[in-house]
Amino acid sequence: MERVIEIAVNHTGNKHREKSESQAVYLFIRTLRAAVWFAAEKGILTWILLFGIWGIASLAYTVDFLPSPLETIAGAKEIILDGTLVRFVAISSQRVLWGWSLGILFAVPAGLIIGRLELLRRIFEPFIDFLRFIPAIGFLTLFLMWFGAGEQSKVVLIFYATVFVILINTIVGVLSIDKNRLQAARSLGASEFQIIYSVLIPSALPHVFTGIRLGLGGAFTSIVAAEMLAAKEGIGFLIYTSRLYFRTDWIFVGLLTLGLMGYVSDRLIRAFGKTVLGRYGINDTRKFE
Image (cartoon, rainbow, N blue to C red; front, top):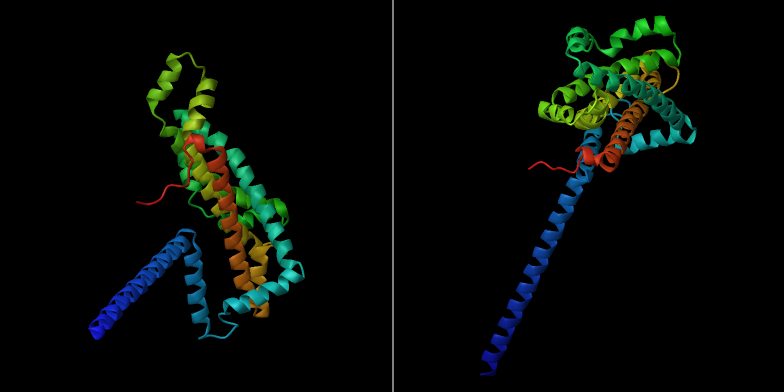
């Protein structure tokens, strides 16, 4: 009898132990899954995979061909400590900001006017469609001849790379406005200025904002080309001249720095749009279904 009781007690204990172990495993899997989803949602998983693949691939090559992430960090440390990288980032950012801002100041009003007036749209549309297919780098030699090798040529080049994408998105935003809204505003006695200010601009703002974000990408692309060929400072200059010293790690530092500059800039713009312009339909919190 005692033997039977002992077996029953052991069996019950084993069941409780197995249940506890299964609960612990379930909790661990659930926590791990939540951590993976969190890392994927925040983009952390992407960077882990990227640097992991990069590190594995670098094992098959020398540092002159493909430096590892650690070797790239060591190279970055060199040009951070002597102030080169910080100075080049500031110079490139200033050039991008000037050209991009001028593109916005010109393209948004011009897009609103061209989109509003059909006659102007018919006149300028062929001109816009012709020029926008000529890459900014194609005008670099002309801009150097016209504006010199100083800052003007680089700012104009960035302006050119930025202006068309903002202009086209603004025109599309104006054309996408429901005509009934415009007619309703007129029937209420609104003047042309009131229609533009109260109906046209708020309705077209999501398209304008998208064009501004896309224009920033064009600005960074063009500044690299300009600094590679016609500058003595900047991230593009760093990337181009590093080949002379066989410093592939510095090239990767320049590439990563450009990506980081663009990423941070875009995040700031999105935060501004969400915070200040959210009531106009600008919201980046939507997720793919």
